[in-house]
Amino acid sequence: MKKTALYAAVLTFLASCAEDAPTPYGAVPSAAQVEWQKMETNMFVHFGPNTFSGREWGNGQESTDLFNPTSLDCRQWARTAKAAGFKGIIITAKHHDGFSLWPNPTSTHTVAQSAWRNGKGDVLRELSDACREYGLKFGIYLSPWDRNHPAYGTDAYNKVFTDALDSSLSQYGPVFEQWFDGACGEGPNGKRQVYDWEAFNEHVFANQPQAIIFSNIGPGCRWVGNEAGKAGETSWSTFTPELHGANRGVLPGDFETYLGEGDPDGACWIPSETDVSIRPGWFWREEETSRVRSLSNLLDLYYSSVGRNSLLLLNVPADTRGLIPAVDSIRLMEFRAALDTIFSVNLAAGAKAEASTTRGRKYAASQMLDTDYDTCWAALDGVTEAVLTFHLDGVKRFNRVLLQEYIPLGQRVKSFEVEARDAAGNWNVIATATTIGYKRILLVDETQTDAVRIRITGSLACPLLNGFGLYLDRIMHSDEPTAADDRLCMADGFRVVAPQGAEAAVDGLWDESHSVILSADKTGRFPSVTVDLGREREFLGIAYTPAEGGRGGCMMEYRLEVGPDGESWTTVTDGAQVDNIVNNPTMRILRHKSMLNARWIRVTPLRSNLAETVSVGELSLVVK
View 1 (cartoon, rainbow, N blue to C red):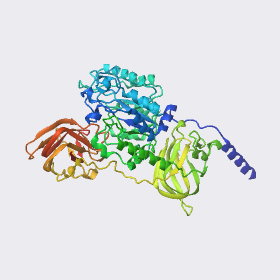
View 2 (view 1 turned 180 degrees about the vertical axis):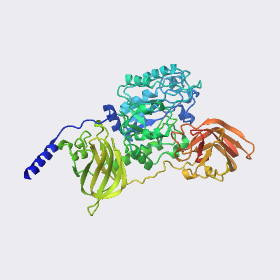
View 3 (view 1 turned 90 degrees about the vertical axis):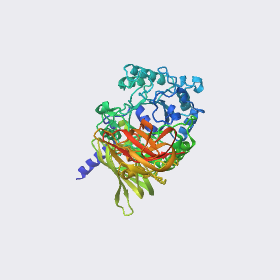
View 4 (view 1 turned 90 degrees about the horizontal axis):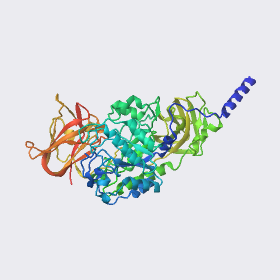
């Protein structure tokens, strides 16, 4: 018996001294992908002709002179981004309208043809210089869709686009991320383009070998599947793009889930990036100034992106001066100060850590509490369940739990629990979750304890964790993304006359229970929503909000008619688009070019993303 006990003790000691490094599991990130993930938050800047027209998607027919920032200062952008804690800036070098913010030799729709700075301006030059000055990384967004170039929709256009890539990527220094979207609408000739993505990626890497390429399916990082700022509660960095290679531009619902959650068996390391705007729209509009996201909502975005193994790309659009507006900038400073306050003190620091299994001293549980990214706790090979216990140096109060996996060797954990010990010595589950990845932040009820336990209940291979923290967030949180907009006139004596039962379209509310779903008839036509405004009114246009989350379909094109009596009508616009409403199903301000004066309006949806239904969460007037 004594010999058996001695042998067991020796074997246990030898196991504890084992220093063999764990072998990588599954798809693993490149060094550039690891550094990209460590950036955590970057700034997107949408800027171009749409800034001046008020549109989300320009039609490509805008005069080049429309682009005319009066006080462009990219150093102000960089100062703002640096102070807000962003690590890089990505600029819309060319949006769907085809206008290029640099003298693009493949186009005649660029800053070189504009009156701005007598055709000598170059936004990419100024921004890349500013990024270097302030220690930020520089990234470029080139939309493959071009509503201006005459070659779009032909085989020749792919060469035009790769030449534009070569031009933008070869003369402004290092580019950390090349941003593509899947937009593929009609060009000026009415045709759609078949994109040569393989050639596009080849030209990116030829010019910028370390660049992370973003697109719906990678190869460097992938779209999270929505523009609401939320990664999946389950969030794998592994992904198989070949499963959905044909769906770069047309994404069915199940694919959006796949984008957000990833795939534990994914063939490639393609982590998600969460792109979202600080305003309702992507480009600056004056009427949205009162609708900049609140501090609490920005924190919620951080928790649902960075806190779910994603990277937050927050759009902060420049205004017609060429500056980040004060309202947006101040909110960013509040955001940075809040993050610094919340995460400056790790309440788990000084804890004594122990694990139910370990590879040896080099991989002890205490490695999760140091500040060295490349040290970690690791279980023995073949072990897929484990318990990590942290005895705190006193009773602590917290409501945020942070965990990190050592992703250079792959993502492994698929389920775990967090437990806290109460005053009576009992362990109580305070959180249950699935994946961890680069970083996972769990929002738990405020908890007071002297010990916390992480129980890993499932892992694809022996788990490796390199970070653990407990934090207290005292900021009040709200699900409301924006403040009220005082330029909207809503439900002020309005009355829906038709169709019957559509009263919720003007009740001032637009959650799921206060929305109208309109069904198409046998010919595919949707009924009109006819509204008596109660009295004659002056207004600039309408605001349309789909049902919450776009459920029931989003109105993509519409007809607006006005009249004095509900019988005679004047068409204001017919076939107007509601830009980018499907990916970002929030309120849209639909302005008319001149002031309108009427008592009655009739709004007819002409096209929805769903064939049979379209939703109306709310119709409002845009007033002075």
